Image (cartoon, rainbow, N blue to C red):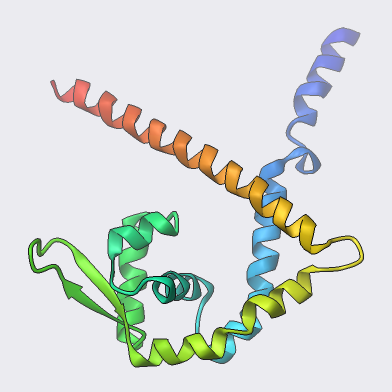
Length: 173
């Protein structure tokens, strides 16, 4: 019975918050988003809108699906976000000439002006993250490690989606 107790304890230890990578990532993400909030609020933006604008500031005139892919969002999240941004005068949506199912997203003059106003945000965020415990090199290393994790998880998700779709096809036949 002592061995059973020890095994049970080991199994349940895995469920403790302190042992969860996902909890650390979730908490860090929430705290970073909260840190962005006052800066973005001054511009009248939400964090997801800021992400869309940054992608469009790099390359204007992207398809909705390209933006969704680039931001790791599903189309059922991206489409309402872009529609809301269009209603707020940040972007325009244009149907594709060759394929009306495609929608292209373009920056408005208002959004182009916001780029100038938002230019100091990355440096400001870096200043908030740096400390005597965290250096610029630490941030670069963490970014590289997170990129690797994101790539691994997105590849796994794509495989899981393909397997689920393949399974659905077998049921149809």
